[in-house]
Length: 409
Image (cartoon, rainbow, N blue to C red; front, side, top):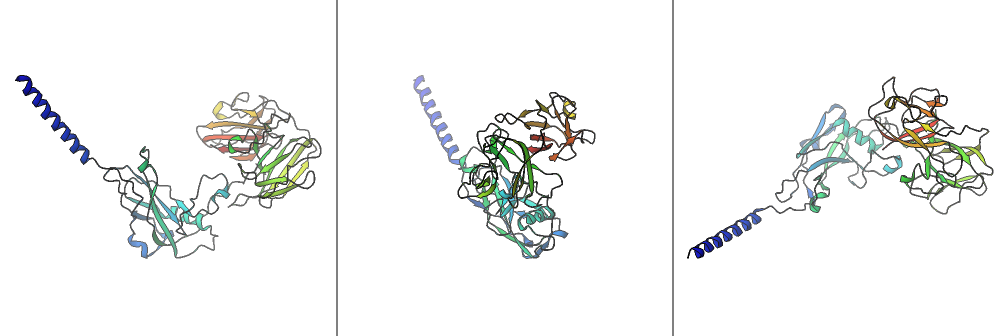
């Protein structure tokens, strides 16, 4: 009898637990997969906001419906002059042409609540990027289209990991001209039988192995918006060993190729390949390319530069160690004559006025190059210290020209 009572009690407890679990499951929120959310139209939308005399523009929106799930969403605001929102402007683009056709800008600020603001300065800068106005041609009473984006960072749930966008609201503004940072010189890349390992690998991850960047020219003027202008390279080429100059890494369709006769060049913009560039006799050559007009001259140099066995970047962060401080690797491994160097360096802080770095050959100071310019420049023997900025860089150096570039990683 005692056993029967215990069994009955256990059965009742099991039913109660089952019912409780079932009730708990029924009360759990079901994660939804929203596709949009609402950005509210601000009260000032019908007015004309003079950005030069305003501090900021405030916006509010509703949280996307995730079915009651407390999503830790991150929001950003995006602005456009066309209301198309097809191509985002990339402020980290290495090539200005990557932003051709960009029709919206994402404001840098992130928001964790359903309210946010854009400073008038940030909005004026974004509109200048999109409008590309001259100082005397800024539009007045310009409609600006604003939307919000939402993403749940770090989520492993497929339904909540993608970005969704709100509706668009229109505000009327009076922008003003903003002087944007001048574009860096637009750099093209050499590749060929005498370049690096000679394997003709034109991908970005092969830069410094199979292809090599050209360099800016001291005193040259570059287009402030596109970075186009004259760039140069000097090196040793064997007669008959072909090479090309690539405009866009990863593509063979755009660049400087061979012409109808040996030593001439032509610009390839899609279409048939004109062939490789070749020189008629072994020797050192200076290449000057105008990336705006696509004119390219290849001139034999009346010089025999010193060939160094090692190169380093001694500086204030490695106690000016000219032997092993940030040693660089020789780039040219098939031509038999190397004057190009490549490596990676990290600087933990900006160089002070008495700090910096230089390039030094063969573990000594007898041949060293420096210049006040950073992140690219042309050093002279015994020149100024290079005042680097904090960060990690891939470094390229040509000891014939003394030209260098520090490419942020």
